[in-house]
Amino acid sequence: MPKVLVSDAIDQAGIEILTQVAQVTYEPDLSPATLLETIPQYDALMIRSGTKVTALVIEAAQRLRIIGRAGVGVDNVDLQAATRKGIVVVNSPEGNTIAAAEHAIALMMSLSRHVGEANASLKAGQWKRSQFIGVEVYKKTIGVVGLGRIGSHVTRVARALGMQIVAFDPYISAERAQQLGARLVDLEQLFHEADYITLHVPRTPETTHLINEKTLASMKPTARIINCARGGLIDEQALYVALKEGRIAGAALDVFENEPLGESPLCALGREVILTPHLGASTEEAQTNVAIDVAEQIRDVLLGLPARTAVNIPGLRAEVLQELKPYLELADTLGNLVGQLAGGRVDALDIRLQGILAAKDAQPIVVAALKGLLTPALRERVNFVNALLEAKERGIRVTETRDSAFADYAGSIRLEARGPEGERSVTGALLAEDELRITNIDEFPISVAPSRYMLITLHRDMPGIIGKVGSFLGSYNVNIAGMQVGRKLVRGDAVMMVSLDDPLPEGLLGEIESVPGIRKAYTVNL
Ligand SMILES: NC(=O)c1ccc[n+]([C@@H]2O[C@H](COP(=O)([O-])OP(=O)(O)OC[C@H]3O[C@@H](n4cnc5c(N)ncnc54)[C@H](O)[C@@H]3O)[C@@H](O)[C@H]2O)c1
Ligand SMILES: O=C(O)[C@H](O)COP(=O)(O)O
Image 1 (cartoon, rainbow, N blue to C red):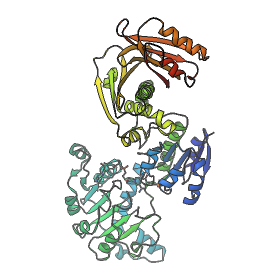
Image 2: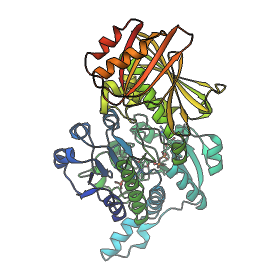
Image 3: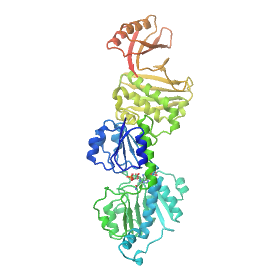
Image 4: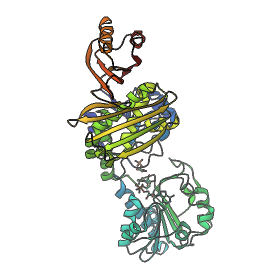
């Protein structure tokens, strides 16, 4: 039974799903040292933001197939290291959207009405109504940085509160912003106009210290900042100085450059600062959503099924996958075959989608073909997660072409590989929906079901060749499961594909190549 480690606090609903298929170890406060030490025994890891999955952890992982992040942000996972090692990383992109958006609104309201300070004051036995005069958000301008899932929901709620909305998000259209009732502006203008600035972007090199000494200086003295997205978007030292000097009115932070926060000058400030310990996703509903969402994906991947929302491989909807699955197997097999025929090194691969496939999403088929191509060299180290990266790192130029007019089969895939030994091509199609057929090798038409062990010869079409090859195989006790010959001209060049029940013994290939009329023989393992 596979083993899953859950190293952050996860809702029981997720644990129950995992236990259907795996032995689950639940260690919500696992130390980094113990994680590093124990990770080699696990097939899957389920985390939230608390666990740092560093390159070291990934290097130590020997059987890890999937990392499931029960939440949105995957910045605590070294994605490149995971991808390189072929580990799929999944998240729950929507499970906590509402929770995070509502927390941002809660922080905005608390900041405006001093809820935290007033509560602490009253509980300390005081009744100081005049000290807690707040401000209204009604008719104020809120600047939303990042109009994705959470930013969009914040926008909807802010509109309902009677606020004006300006937004900055270079990756969304003006129409989308308009539908949400937001006016797209540039960042400078947003900082200049907004009474409230709320951040809803991931942390990237572009967004790191988006709020810094300079941008703080361009804000209104009445501006209030809310960060319920990611630590590091704000230069905390610059924010502290701006608040201390009264250059802006307030800030509410749920996320920090270093978490847990520990000692910070921000903690010494008064009502102008509200701090919460990364609680954006901490609602019962969100925790159930993300736990189920991610646990289901871990279960599926452990059962050999695809993940719904992988962040390091292209996601495929279930119905698309259902339709493409046999073609992925075909592309994988053809890639493997053409790679072996090309003698291992391939510098360029063209993937041509023919017939009905010409209208389909090529990316998964490209990935499958590359996985097959690299399998002879990398074996189990290459998979659907890292095939593109591995191909890129080997400098393989990948092109895709489409030919909807090709009508020999409903849908077929042609691979052309170029390497130091020249150009090789293979084509394959599906019969009866999921029966794989190799239909062409180096322009020789053929129709052969791929098998584990194959012998392929390029030879002259002349009497006696097939018999001799058969006798050689028989003399080595190699059983033939099937045989097909393809030729373009009678007594011209031809190809023979022999499916074998056993691997070809060493030395036999040379003997076969010595048969007069045989130009070249290959043994191929698919
Ligand atoms: N505090 C919490 O507990 C909590 C909970 C959930 C999510 N989050 C964080 O909130 C953030 C937003 O999450 P989401 O689900 O809305 O993500 P999302 O991917 O739906 O939206 C992010 C948006 O940011 C935009 N963006 C990217 N780079 C940008 C840039 N340089 N400038 C402006 N816009 C840019 C994108 O176009 C996208 O529209 C993430 O960082 C996520 O990790 C925090
Ligand atoms: O990116 C997220 O989903 C949030 O930061 C939530 O993090 P958490 O799961 O650790 O609460």
